[in-house]
Image (cartoon, rainbow, N blue to C red):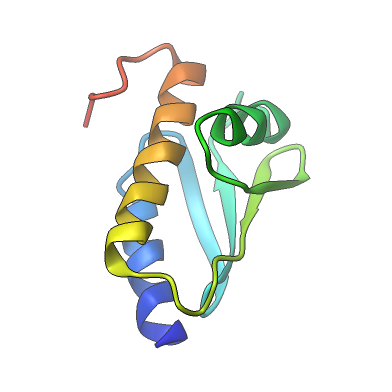
Length: 96
């Protein structure tokens, strides 16, 4: 389950503007942000939207969801991260 859910999370994250790369194993993932994005600001914005992520370096977020995370929760988490990134990229939240 962790491997499949991690692959889904990685695949969805890679479609988000502002995500440069995703690395990790299973559901323990690091998300490298595009140049010019501050991981602490993105993490704070995500938290304000209801999602807990950690800024582990100035340019990377750590995601460590529960092994019981559902596909719907993965999609919602990616939407929240996308919204936080779009706010930093000065784009509308519903932009692809």
